Amino acid sequence: MDIYKIKGGKKLSGEITISGAKNAALPIIVASLMADGETVLHNVPNLMDIRTIVKVIEALGAKTHFDQAKNILKITAQNIKNNEIPYELVKTMRASVYVMGPLLALTGEADVSLPGGCAIGERPVDIHLSGFEAMGAKIILEHGNIRAKTKKLKGATYKMNKVSVGATANLMMGAVLAEGKTILENSAMEPDIVDLGNFLNAMGAKIDGLGTDKIEIDGVKKLNAVSYSIMPDRIEAGTFLIAGAITKGSITLKNVVPEHIGALLYTLKEMGFKIKTTKDTVSISPSQKLLGTIIRTVPYPGFPTDLQAPIMALATILSGITTVTETIFENRFTHVPELRRMGADITIEGNTAIIRGVKSLSAAPVMMSDLRAGAALIVAALAAKGTTEIRRIYHSDRGYEKLPEKLSQLGVSIKREKGEA
Ligand code: UD1
Image (tube, rainbow, N blue to C red; front, side, top):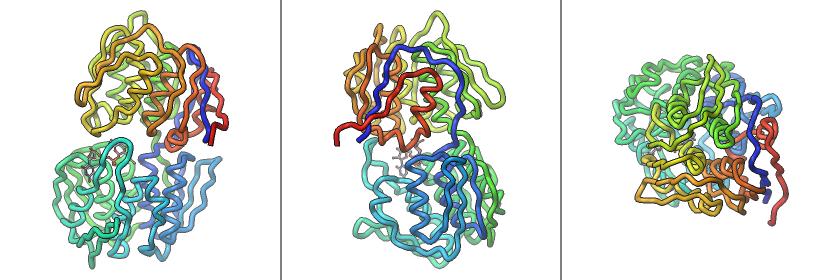
């Protein structure tokens, strides 16, 4: 298994271009199953999770061609069948459950493995399932599989008992080809959902209320294949801004929608960083006085849970105290013991981490436990004294395209090496 060796202490400088959004691309790729003809997707990040979802749709009968260098994915979906998706694929990625919506809409049946637990908690799919039940599907759980069946999905009004990005995407995909009108209440407002909705509308779907907590979908008979460009990845952008911040560097990110990271920009400004934005760039630079603050993760447009770990790494070296409360996932502090190994002073009380700023971090061998916890370790390594060795970096391959290349471009000394088996 490969490891990263990162030499800390260098101020980041320069500019990089942010890739397409993983969490928008995943459902959009799956939604292409419903198109008549060849879908052409641009700005598709070349990531492990993307390559996995491509294998998933191939297992259902889609033909694909992914030009990884140009980030263009072509998908032709004909004769889509409710085939078994190898468990090997599903177990690595919860987003496989996204095939339920399109499969139910197209074939009236969907059998998918029930996603297991994962490093950040239990992550159930009950909201997805009860939403499909409201739309007329019969659902049975047996032998570790979800089996869903219906003659034809029917429009329904369904209020989610918790804001769920995944359930909103899945139900929206099912609803676009359902009979009649579907109203999703308490739906997710994340930009990824808006991007998926814009893609579906471009194909001929009738979706209203994107970006609000009430999405209304009038079912249509057919969707046409289109060419579409995936929006920029706000979590990648956020991670790089935090990386620039922890080194007190000055960097500019291109291909960003500043509005998508509004809560992060607010937090960084509160900490004392200077932020400049244009329509599609964000720049960060330090100021003399940098201070801890109070952070609470909440659904969009609030502070994203996916940036909770990286911002905590930044807080470890700011003056004063930062508190970080995680309200979305129950076990998302696995980066804390690793950050402590690097000299961070962090106490956990329930779902709140209390971070007391230290003068500096020091390099230590550490291990990624999931994608965003991994991002926190990379951020910490950039500021640490010495060379940090990070193991299990396959987690960051899932979500950060060309990470070493982009960090090198900003002046970081980073090597990817073969580690122990
Ligand atoms: C997506 C993102 C992930 C992000 C998360 C929250 C993708 C591929 N992943 O994950 O990066 O961290 O949104 O912004 O887009 N829940 C239930 N029942 C359900 C579904 C969810 O209880 O049926 C709970 C979850 O356990 C969690 C909360 O709802 O506590 C939010 O989860 P959800 O928004 O569904 O996250 P994902 O779509 O899995």
